[in-house]
Structures are given as C-alpha cells and as structure tokens.
Length: 307
Ligand SMILES: Nc1ncnc2c1ncn2[C@@H]1O[C@H](COP(=O)(O)OP(=O)(O)OP(=O)(O)O)[C@@H](O)[C@H]1O
Image (cartoon, rainbow, N blue to C red; front, side, top):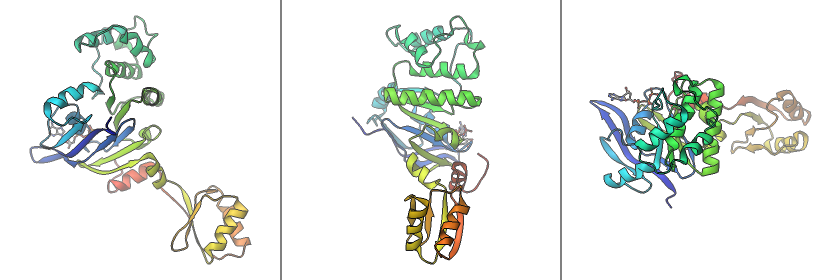
C-alpha cells in the first residue's frame, strides 16, 4: 500500500497568460486530513478540479493511488468522493431518494448503502422532508452522504463550510473527524479560514498566487504558533534553575544566545518576573511572543490581511 494517496509533480495550469497554478508539488499521506489553505483566487479550486479530472493541467503530472498514466488515473479517480462547489442534490427528493438516484446514476450496486450513508451523516430521521426544505447544514451533510456512496478512500471537499453557521461548521468538522478516525478515510479539505481547519487537519498546505508556499504537519504549525515569554537575563543557567525550582516547570528552552523561551505561566508575567527578581537576576528583556494561526498564515502569504 502506498504511503501517499496523492502526489502532484510540478503541476501547473494557465488560463491565457494567467498562471492559476504554478509548479505545485503537493503530497497527501494516507489516513491524513489535509487542510488546503489559501485566500480567494489562490488556486485551491483549480487544483481540486485537476485532481478530480474536471480540468486538465497545462504542465506537470498527478499520481493518484500510484497511478500516473491517463487511463489508470481514470480508474483511480473512482476511489475519490468529492463535493466541489455546492453539492449536486435533487431539491424535490427526500434524502433517501437523493441517495438512491445518485447510486443508480453512478452504477453502485446494492441498495443497502443508502440507509448506511444516511446514518453515517446523521440524516436517518429526515423521512419525507424534501431536500429543498433542508437547512444549509443538512444539505451539506446530504452532499457528503452522496460523496460517500461507493466508499471512497479519498474524500475531497472544496470549502465545505462556506456559508454554514458556527453549529454547522462544528457538525461538519466532527463528522469528517469521525470518518477519518473510524474508517481511516483520507480527506483533502480546502478553506480560506485557517482556524476552521485547525481543529481537524493533521497536515496543511498553504497556497498563494498559484504557488504552494509550504506544507507542514499540525504539530509543526502548533510549534510555530506557540505562545511564550522571551526572557533575557545576565545568568541564563541560574534563570533556568530558578524557573524549574520556583515555577515548577521544564517547559522552556534556553537558546544559543542565552535567551529563554518560557512556554508555561505565560498568563502570569508578574509571577515570572518576581521569581527572577527575587533570585537577584538582572532582567534585560521580558516580552510575550508568538503568533496566532491567522497571523502566521497572513505573514506566510506576504502580509495581506484579506483572507
Ligand atoms: N476557467 C477559468 N478561466 C480563467 N481564469 C480562471 C478560471 N478558473 C480559475 N481562474 C483563475 O485562476 C485563479 C485561481 O482560481 P481558483 O478558483 O482556483 O481559486 P480558489 O483558491 O479556489 O479561490 P476561491 O476560494 O475564490 O474559489 C483565479 O485568479 C481565478 O480567477
């Protein structure tokens, strides 16, 4: 079994003179939830359309479940489930009828998958209610059930929380986490709001102006966004001992230049400075530092606040 379900190699797409995607090398590990983050117009939908075969690259290649060649790619795409733009639903049909119609259209054998999918997305109790009368969150979950028909190994969702209220965002997030946890489903999910991806993604790709600027794990991102107090004193060794003994924590780093990054007690600057001062240390610098997710993202894409 391949470690990566999807890799793109120098993938590019041009619309006339405009490079919507520029030499993108993206890799998605099996079993991961890959948060694909970028502003409006960054190139997220274009990449997703190329992966799902709705558009063709100008240059570069796609490797999906180990398949690269065009005919093999068509077969491999059958292992993908997707919601691109708004989910394709029949408004005058019930949830169950929508799934049954999609099942027949896609030639998926066995009616028993319909109640199974409804249950999976929590719509088993919607009875005779037609899709047109569903809330946006319910429509999105029904769209997800349609995408799950055929038990895909890779689920691709283009901005699935767009327009959802906070409750709908949480529901969708919990549902996707469950699919990932219980079925080991790999998920690629795009968004222009990093904090929406934050509580579920295990990996991130940051795209801007058609270029993939960075891929990083959730741990790496958290490390970059961790808050700390930056301390410079005349005797770093003694300060380290004082922090350990008097604040009771080892959650700090002594940097090469002797500066200390203290990750604990950051809400109690008075307490930190008082233990250092009481030990007779001279404090040269004492500054709370660190970034939140959105400011990290904004900085990474070059400072534009409009996401
Ligand atoms: N069919 C097309 N013809 C011309 N330009 C296009 C076409 N599709 C996309 N583009 C351009 O390519 C760039 C990337 O668009 P894309 O839709 O991939 O961005 P996105 O990150 O998905 O943003 P959004 O969140 O707004 O959908 C944009 O500048 C867009 O205007």
